Amino acid sequence: MIGTCVNNTLKFRYVLMDSGFGSVENFDFIVKKKKHFIAALKDNRLVALSEEDKRQGRFVRIDVLELSDKQAVCGWLKGYAHAVLLV
Image (cartoon, rainbow, N blue to C red; front, side):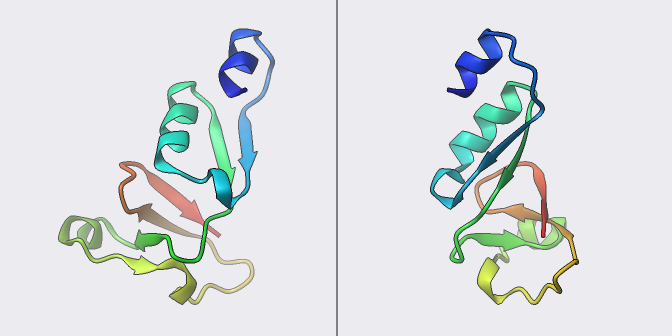
């Protein structure tokens, strides 16, 4: 559907998706189309909170992060090359 919207020159910047579509393949596809994404992530997704942690393979489950309601942190999802903003 995203490819069809891009091919039909529909104007949009963001793709919003629920956790069922939050995969590395989908993220890569959206970024290749020069769009941004907002995605809910499942509790068991693994994230590193620094580039050093990512390089060392130190990932933690999202459900153990203790973020306040309005706090956002930069992180790296396991298997995804780009940094993401976690809220």
